[in-house]
Every structure is written in C-alpha cells, then in structure tokens.
Length: 306
Image (cartoon, rainbow, N blue to C red):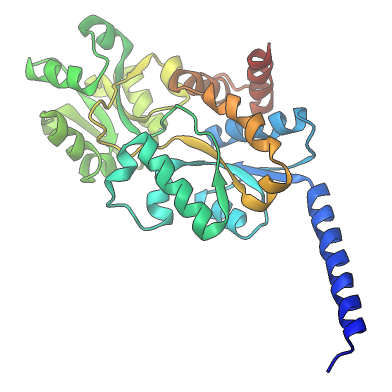
C-alpha cells in the first residue's frame, strides 16, 4: 500500500502538472483553418484577422483542404477553428433524410447540439448567407419580368416565357436538385430548355448564362457564388425551402472556447454582417477581380468597425 504522504505528494504534483498543462494550452496560439476554395479563403481571413485584431495570438492554416480534411483536423485537435456550413451536418451525422436541414434555425440547432455532445465542438453565430444550390437568371430577364423567386419563375414559365438553363448532369438528375425544384414549384423543363455540362463547376454554368451560349439565360449556381454580381445573374429565392440550408458558421473546439471566451463575441458581429449579397461581393472581389483575400477581409473589417 502506498504511503499516504507520498500519495498526497503525487496528487499535488499531478495537480501542478495539470495546471501547467492548462496554462500552456491557454498560451498556445489559436490555430485557424479553412477550406481550399474562394469562400473558404475569405471567411478564414475574416476569422483570422478578427481574432488577431482582438488581441489573440493566432496560427494561419487557411485553405488547408477539402471538407473531409479540415473536419478531420478539427476533430483530431490539429486545428482549433474553421468556418463550416450548417447543412453539412446532414452528412457528418448521417441525417440526410431529416427535414431539419431545410429550415435555417432547425439546421443550426441540430448540428450545434449534435457536434457539442458527440465531439466537443461549438458552432458559433451563423451568417445569414445561404450557400446552397440555386437557379439564377440573367439580370435583364429578372428585371424585365420581375423575377425574384422560384415562384415568380414558375409563373413566367407557365406563361410560355423563353428559358434555358445551364446545369451539371448531377443537378439535372439528382432527386434533391432540379427535380425537387420542379415538383415543389410546379414547372417542368423540356430537354431543349436545358444545356447539360460535364462536371459540377458553377463557373462554367454562369459563364454560359452570361455569354448566352446556345440561348442559355439561366444557370445552376450556389447562393453566394462570387461571379453572380460580376456577371449580372440574380438568384431566384427558394421561398418553399426545397434545398438544405448551408449557412457558414465558425466552429471551434470547446476547450479552446473555454480558454478564450472572447472568440464568440469577436466573431458574432462579423458573421451577422454576412448576408447573401455581401458574401457574393466579397467572393467576387477575389474570384473575379483577383484581389487578395487578406486585403478583402481587412477592408471589410475596417468598414465594419468604422
């Protein structure tokens, strides 16, 4: 049996080591990462610079990789914080059939609760912007016929309006994409109203609409694509909530947030300011105008604080 004095000394030593470990963790830089695409670079820079401006030491791991790579790095503790999309919770937790993902508040609460309980990850304040599948039409068409939503578009098609959509095969064929839109809004596109492009790159579909390739005047896009404003394409609002909601949201390890609770208050006003038009513009500054994401983020944060 161990001497009780030695036991107390061992416990005290262990406590000291634990205290030192926590202190060291508190002093470690917050490792900020993002996905490898344009929007990832913009959102990542907003987070990185906001925390740094708020007095936190940060480590830059931006544009680390695809969703699976960045997510795995977060759950493994290799990074501390990155922007993710609420709708991806459907795949993280094998809940793709749940209707929760088509409502912004339910999607956020569902992934927030599940990730905290299972993985010790905290979803902070989401952006209003929704980077989900969308149908966008040429600006001149939208303005001439007062098209703002998919309900407007359905009425326009019902009246025999001229329409041709550039889209990927996945968008045209997947039950969750164009077929779901058609069923919900009561329209049906004929083969000659579709230009099906290989791959799923929205840059190609937007370019086809902008250049009116083969008579195209609409495109499969994502809600916050950077090229939308530059190419004068207008997203048709999904008023019936057909598509899952993909709101960008900072996700942080709970232990890091406990050590630095100011992270939440620093980032909340930044993401609250990111509506669809704003994020489209920021993405466009990088993707179309070729500006440095760091400068785009810096300018946005300067305006936010002014």
